[in-house]
Image 1 (spheres, rainbow, N blue to C red):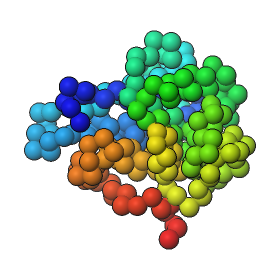
Image 2: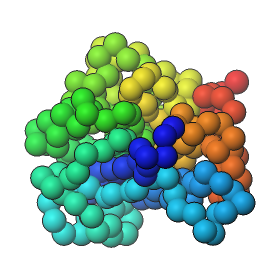
Image 3: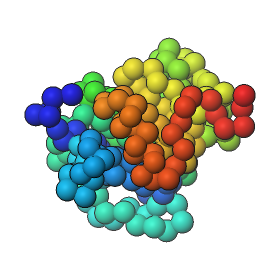
Length: 212
């Protein structure tokens, strides 16, 4: 990738009762990525990360942790990558026409749009999973089927890479997906080095943990 195109801007949508690790996992991956490991302390991440909410003000995640958005959906700049996390709050957000319209619109302008956990149900309701492979948390396959009846739901996969729409299984699987996104943009060696920095196993394949 041409360095003049960097940093890539990543937007992570947040909302009340969003799952903490769905946000923090990808955030950590993108923030610790470096293109030159030997200059880790001198160089910055090739990603610029923004937390985005529907309105100004703090968002209360599952468990009570509070996130402060950088921008709202009204003043959000152009994005290269949109991450839609999950959590209990998705049960409300699947009925939020403003958010669904914004997701659908942004997906036409990003290089990649990705979901973590039940965030895939928001992608489904936004019309982005028609005929596409998708997955979600193992407890919520029926929730995804309701949101995306024409999606090819993969209960066996940890993540799906159906360009330009990516989805992952629940919670910690967002880290795996984010590492594969790093590899998508910058190559496997950079993705593996990022995982090593986090002391997290790089996902060698897309199989859901516990499946063979």
